[in-house]
Image: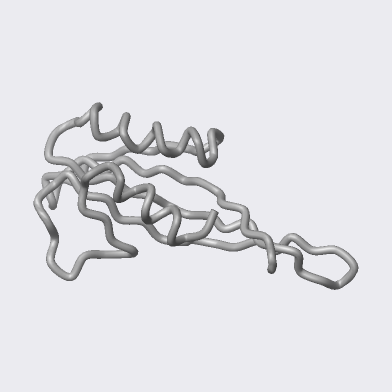
Length: 108
């Protein structure tokens, strides 16, 4: 799966989606995602593809199980071994649920 495909999947939730940040924050809930690290898939001194690690962040005003469920349904089809973290950002008065996933992209 490519980053564009990931973005399109996240947009299918109906929530605003941005890579890294919004220039003007929309009303919650909204989603921000970013690629955090890459790892090469290689052999015989040739790169055959990459494991691309992404962080997907859901921001909500209240604990929103429906929004989380929408994202998790998508992630279950992409990388069912995703990790989840959650915190309340007091300065923003927002809940943040962070999902970490790995996408595999093969070289063309």
